[in-house]
Image (tube, rainbow, N blue to C red; front, top):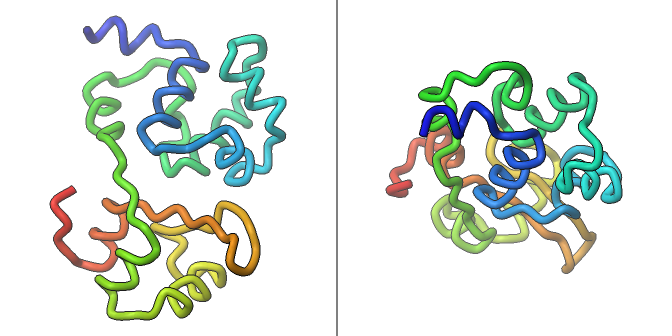
Length: 145
C-alpha cells in the first residue's frame, strides 16, 4: 500500500484531494486563480504544472507546500489527507450564534480565512467553502470530525 501512495502521479493526487475536499474544477480555479482549461489538463495528465505552481495549488488547498512535489512521507500523507468535511453557512452560523448574513460578510472580509472562503458569486448567489475540521480547531468547538 505504501508504494501505491508513493507512486501516485500529480493528476491522481490532485483528483483525490479535490474529491476529499468536495471541490469542482471551477472551485479549484477560483481558489488558485488558475484557468479551468489548465486544471483540466492537469487532471487528465496531459500537462504537469511547474514546481512553483504545484506549491501554489497545495497552499490554496491548505496542504503542505511540498504535498505534490518530491518523495512523499506516506505516513504523514495518510494523516494529512483525512477526509475533509464541509459545513454549510447555515450550520456554521448556528454554531457561532450569528446570522447567516453577518457570517457571510465576515467571511468575505477574510476574517475567517483560516477555515472559510468565498468560492463564487455575489449577493444571493455566493458559494462558501467552510472546512469543518479547521473551523472546529480555530473556534474551539467539538464537531466530531
